[in-house]
Image (cartoon, rainbow, N blue to C red):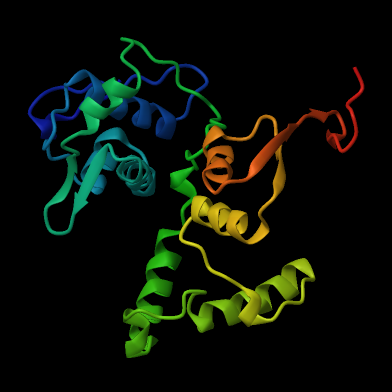
Length: 230
């Protein structure tokens, strides 16, 4: 059991059997925010300070802060430290109003990637390099297919990793998966077979573009192109 005197009150962290310090810290912070113990705007101690208090590596605490910030529970402000997000506890209660929530080991829900695995450092480095070297016209209205530099890069990538040879002029960059589906619907037309278990949103995008959709089922071998065995 540990506590944070730095917060002005005791926030106890108990380590359940079979769970590591990182998972315990994440769970404790989420529960404290959800219960209102850590109120919106509360400033958390620096990762180094908390790590010393808990007797763990600083990276462990820093990773927890980063994961919670990526999920919207915390906000990192340069020069001001890390604080509890304004809408964190309200949002969590709206999602799941039950007093106790089961922590999922793995989530297969769409739109819920493992934010802790996001390569923040590489992303920032690449974004800085791209913004520094980008021509002026890249910030104005450009080719509706997407920047030619990106399409050229995708041509090389697809050839190297997928064995697909394609001309950059035949690549179209979409703003999202939904945007891409809408563009394909307009280009294809007619009747489209869709997975019977696909997201309703994706099927509705096809319907909105005037296409007829036919759901197809799956068996142990995958998509059924013929009637599935009963």
